[in-house]
Each structure stands twice: as structure tokens, then as C-alpha cells.
Amino acid sequence: MRMILICEIPGLWQNLARKIYARHKKMYASENLPIDVAHHSCGSTRYVTRADLVRSAGMLGAAYTFTDSAPAGEQVLHGQFDTLRLRPGLILHTACVRDLRTMETSNHLNPGVKIVLLVDGATDLSFGHHRFQLGPAGPDPALRGTGALVNLAEEDMFARRWQAGRSERKVSLTLTPAWLEEGGFANHADHRAMASFCAEHLARQPWTVSGRARALARQILEPGSFAPGLERLRLESRCIELAAEALAVIGTPAAPTSLRELERRRLRRLDELLHADGADALSMADLAREVGTNPVTLQALARRAWGCTVFERLRALRLDRAQELLLGGASVADAAAVAGYSAATNFATAYRRRFGCTPRQVRAR
Image 1 (spheres, helix red, strand yellow):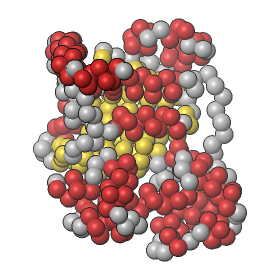
Image 2 (cartoon, helix red, strand yellow):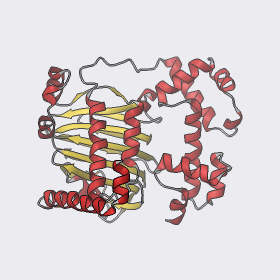
Image 3 (cartoon, one colour):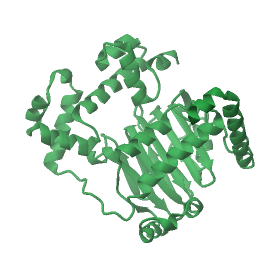
Image 4 (cartoon, one colour):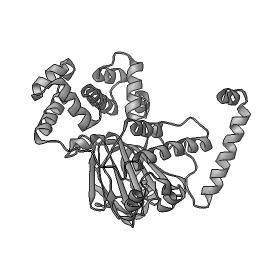
């Protein structure tokens, strides 16, 4: 009934949006913070320069540096890359990007709890001396379904290792000590564990990302359709729920995620088979026989390592190949065929779900 009321009285929707937007604008104007969230997500793409990176990092810390020297206007990322302060103490960073350079960057981060969730692709980053290589290219494939949860009780170094051609889609949250205190975390189910975590510099908690957390991250990366003020509220609600998912694991024993050497070898062989031509013709029984196990064990291994089924992984790889073709100038029809889709609409839906934009948007740019 509430939705019907708003639809029947559009003026109410617009007035509400204007009031919320004005309140946010007033709150953030004094801090020179961005107020337009319409372009925060994967709805449009752009080239990100070195100067853009430095400006974005200023909201999280200081002293952003590059391991090499080049003009400030050099383009280093392609995609969607934004940092947004939803309210004082709650900062959202989204990235749906492809690296254009191989290099390393670093900056000093302000204190706070850092939550990173990789949706697709791979990333290689460090908080202090803790390194997180998330994605199938990391040394431990089990990290495919794992997020980073780290506390900075004091300023420390953040580093990112870049690789030309590598893509990533990720959501990062920063929760400052003041935000955690105002959020009433004294009522946390295990407050002592929470207090201990927030007091220890570089404390980290293993976090196996749940299906709900991954769905929330995808919603955060989706283009918004609301007016600016309401869109900010939508983002804030998703971020708070995602933070709750991550913080809930503090104080709980970590489930074993490491793989045995035999499992690593099987996973490497499986990945080779899925990357090879003709992978579409192989059944689960064929794949299991090739890696020396049975279909049930192989499926369980894939879920542990990649957070998805074997054929979900195969579909993702085919979409990655289709993206490379589109970026190289191929037609949407050719890319769809490589991805294994005969219907353009099905291909567009799958492509948008994985990369946050449509194939035609990629071609148009």
C-alpha cells in the first residue's frame, strides 16, 4: 500500500527526496564531500587518472604514493571507481575496474575497521604487514570466497599491487571508531571480543563471505534508480547490513579453509580444463575423472575454493573471454557466441550481473 501511495502521489516522492537530499547536502557541504551518488556504481564507465586516485584516497588517509613516476593525468584504471562518505564515520568505496598499468601504490590509512568483499575478479592488497590476495589467482584458492576484515587501531600503510589487464569488482567499507561507538556496539552479542578486536592494531578475523553478504555487495554495485537523497539511504542500508554480516563473525572460531596439497593440485588441473577449448563438452563425470576424484567431492572443492559451482566458474570464465573480445572491438553477437549464449538478451543479463554494465554499453564507449 505504501508503494501504491507513492506511485499515485508522485509529488510526495519528489518532496521527500528533496528534503532528504537537502539534509545530506547541508551535512556534507561543510566537509566538501561528494553529494551526488548517481555515478557511484557500475552504471557508467570512465578512465581514472593518477590525480583521481589521489583525490579519492584523501577521504581515507594521506600520502598516496606510486612506485613509479608519470604525469598526474595518466589513465591507470578503466571502469567505475568511487569513494563516498555516506555519513561521518561510514565510508564506502566501490570498484568495478580493469588495471591499465602494472605497478604498486600505497597510502597511510586513518584508524578504523576495514571490510573488503571481492565480488568478481582478483585483487592483491595489504593492510600493514597483512597481505590479502583475493581471487582465483591467489596462492590459496580458498580465499576465493573470503573477505578481508582488519582493524587499524592507529594509522598504518595500505598497499595495492596492480597488474595490467586484471579486473576486479569489490566493495570496501571503513567504519571509524566514532561510528562504531555511536552504533551501540556495546550491545554486540560478544562485546568483549568486539572490544578486544577494536583495541588491537592490525587485528584480523577470517571471514568466509556468506551468500547474503555477496548479494548485498552486488546490490551496492548496481546502478541506483532513486533520487539522490533516497539513493544515499539505499546505499547506507545495504552497507550497514553488510557491516553487520562481517562484524558478526568477530569472536567466533574460524572454520578451517586451507587446502591440502592434493586438493591444490586437483584445483589447478580443474582450472586448466575449464580454461581449455572444449570445456563446454565436458560433463562433471569427465572433469572429476580428469582430476582424479568423484563429482560430489569435486563440486564441494570448487565451492570451498571459489565460492561457486564448477559450471558457475565455467560460465564466469566464458563471460571474461567475451569481455576481452568486446574491449577489443568484437560485436556483441560474436561475444555472446563465445560466452555460450544464443540469445542476446540472456547474454546481456548475464554480462550485466557479472560486470555491472551491458555489452552494448561497453561497445558504445
